Length: 304
Image (tube, rainbow, N blue to C red; front, side, top):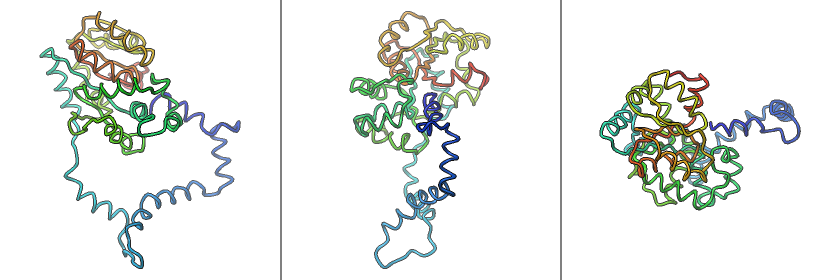
């Protein structure tokens, strides 16, 4: 969950002056069993009600549940399953690029990036801002045509694109409509998980990638992360401490060009997608969209 979204979730239900928990209890008191009833209705609407639309008049389909039909249909579409590049495979690709001094970029598409691309394209902008009040925190106060074009171009040009495994409406539910709108053929992209940053860490692959390399850190946690990496024997040759949204990308690129480094770890919200692709494409270096992994390492929530 993006940090901005936590704040939005925390304030939900407070419009009437009640704290979220009190508001929730008030609703439950006013509508006994309301949540359970809503859940049942939602499951029905998304399952058996859809099945019913395909059953002809004056017929029933005895003893076959929606889950059975989904399983049967899934078997039909199983050949379309697309395998994502694993953390171990990705580590191998990164190391090979570093050894060969080849440009290499890994960008990640989460709900923030997808909602930014979806604004005024596949969704009304107002709906996007209601769904994603965290976008300004993530570097996009307002999704403009120029910002969307820059993001789409970065996706086209990246070596690897992390995509969400979640099929939720603002994740895969937006991924393919957004790619289609911008004329990006997903089958032509090299795909990994949008949580590949965490996958590399959890698989204990991050430090082996970084040790022996010159590392540039970009983002609000760069200085603290630099201290942590230094303690683990990583040579940090540069720190760019903040990225003030998409409007700041050009300045950050100018600063980036002044450093000697082999790989950049970019923890800068949505602008990280553009920065990583441009670092590879314009400077010939490797760049990894590092995301909130930087925060979790600095705070000690995760350990190197």
